Amino acid sequence: MPSFNQRITRIKGLSDKRRLPRLGRVRLGIKVANSKGVTYPKEVPYFVVPDEVKAVYGDKPTELDVMLPLDDIDTVFPVSYKFYGSGKGLKCNGDGEIAYCADEKTKEVIEKKCPCELLEQGKCKQSGSLSVMLQKINVGGVYQINTSSFNSIVDLASGIDYVKALIGRVAMVPLKLRRVATETHHEEKKQTHYTLQLVLDANIDAINQLRGDTIRVLEHTSRIALPEPENSNPELDPPDEIVDDDIPPELGNEQETKPNPYLLPEYDKGQAVKCPANKGKIRPKIDCDTCDSKSNCIAWGLAAA
Image (tube, rainbow, N blue to C red; front, top):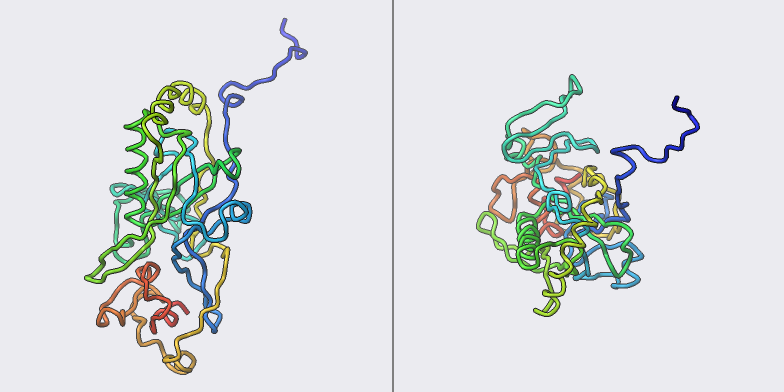
């Protein structure tokens, strides 16, 4: 007869699970505060990194040495359309055909067509979360980097696929992650943004050596899982750094005495503005987040208030 004294030390399907911890976040922008106390995000040409990374790379690195811990692109770099609304948590997640959304009334998850009108209104946007190991800092976990840039998403996925085609894997391959000045055109306006690129910096001898280690690496990394990406509303993220930015002098005291002439009253507050830099054309306020003229724009500070 079996006895409770029998030694059991493992649970099938559980004890064999392995997961790396998340060590921190690497951000692509800072929060700027004007003299009225209004804060808003601002893109910067460098990585905004935690203190332990600054100790190795300096305060404003534009290149990091990284490795992807796994070979599955859907795990190390998941991409989807995301809508947060005014709350902190994710409310809708879609792939361009189907979206899974939280019903505000029933609190149940429902399916709906994707994309929907929220994308056109600028309330929903594409988002990718890259998980990397910083081998010069700590290989005991991953750092998360979020991007909503179309060019960054395409370039990161392209870099991953290229390395896999060249070596047979991307897991544990030393790579360079760079901020690269990229010229974009939106509504006939030229802008410069600092997109992300993954680069393999290796000669043919190093590539051949990496190829020879592929089977062993894939065998060991296949048993590792990653933490789910943090899905908190980026607009409500606590700032890593706040820089004071005075309101442009042409505003004077109008913000306190007059309604905002650039904010459209028929939209939810802050969702649409008449863009001064584009002949008053109506644009979703989310476009301001990637506009190089934002910090000097006479409409933006008012629209953000």
